[in-house]
Length: 134
Picture 1 (cartoon, one colour):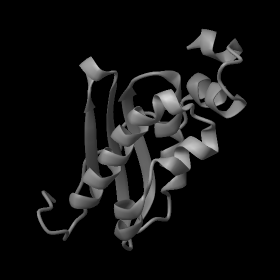
Picture 2 (picture 1 turned 90 degrees about the vertical axis):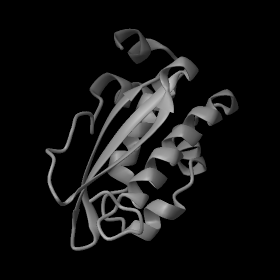
Picture 3 (picture 1 turned 60 degrees about the horizontal axis):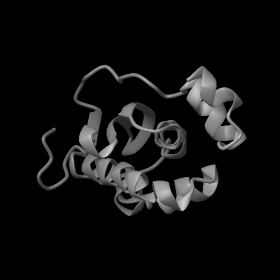
Picture 4 (picture 1 turned 60 degrees about the vertical axis):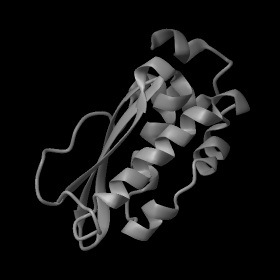
């Protein structure tokens, strides 16, 4: 992603997150970890989010994603943004917050909906949630 670092089509925070990828990786599996997935490689965006839960709140978030620099930056941003959140916060999270914070252009909004789908999937998988797999 070195080329993104110098590409002025992307805002400074998108360039930084594309270069450094804070939050990339995986949280080691355990009973306190929830995962949310969404997307389709053929449509240009796939993400897996993992959150470690303690005391009913997100204490750590990680992501693995395939997509454009705006999508990667938004997934990275989200791992920071949702720290401290409870399950209802994940259920209510809206992609527009990432779009506004990172200056994502309207042409990329559909990709951010994929991110919202993954967050909502994590909320469904929250320990004790109806239909949870944990």
